[in-house]
Image 1 (tube, rainbow, N blue to C red):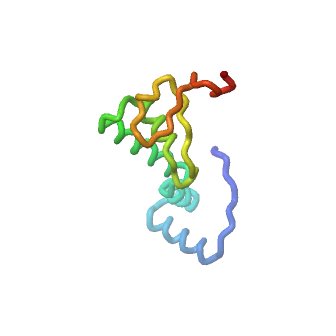
Image 2: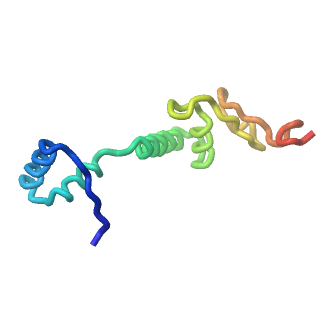
Image 3: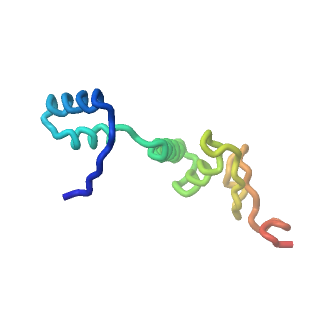
Length: 112
């Protein structure tokens, strides 16, 4: 048997959920699981947005999966703010507007 736990809700909410469960022919626990699985967390939404965005970039010819993922990660997002610096040996591979710096540039990573 799967691990279970108890959640506390008002009697009104419990009665409403119990009625829904009866109408759907499932247990109250199963109903709560079904309802929870339909509502993604903020992290799951962000993962879906990233996957769709990177897929669209690949489709639109921005490059392969690795490059498109790097571009996506380097762009500012509401949840992270700011812009990342892409350290690369191929500065020219990135479109204008991306902060790409040659990893072997003088002074980069302690190099002189």
